[in-house]
Image 1 (cartoon, helix red, strand yellow):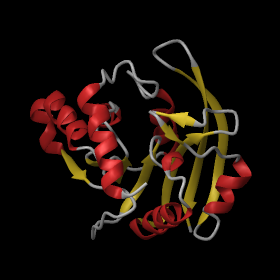
Image 2 (cartoon, one colour):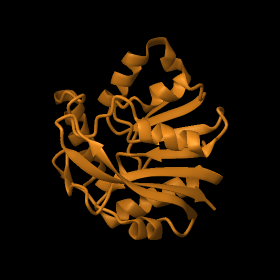
Image 3 (cartoon, helix red, strand yellow):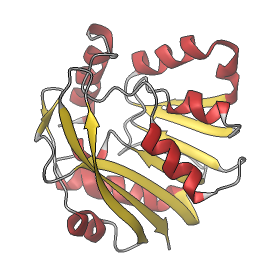
Length: 206
């Protein structure tokens, strides 16, 4: 899927759907917060969440006194929802409306968090661009927290084909510049009462 097609798709999703009812919704991103706190990074660490949609992770990170937060999504509508929700707190966050495989920045990050993008990249070229991007933008010793659908997860989400991963497969993809810290699977309960099996992986930039 080309960038403009991705943008059209996701702008439509966030324009037309009640995202409190979509399958990926979390009122409290408990696993992500637990993993971030487990890494025990400094509160001034530069954190980027890619494919944030209109998630609440940024809100909770602010509440926990993390001060250098960037939220990136291809959908401007999704980002505007967060901005409206945060009110005055919006000044504490950097927002980037961009495709994660193409965005450029001189900023280097200590933590890259993604629970929503990588498994949608079914094209090998897009995956390679993603891996190169995170490799370039993380400092040495920085962390990547990646949530993808496992081999027991769905193969379609939001009307799009997704790529499922095993621990071995995801580790191999990032093996050139990262060392694996931890991988585990976890069931996410959807708002409709269903279940999606995720593979969460933590890597450290070499």
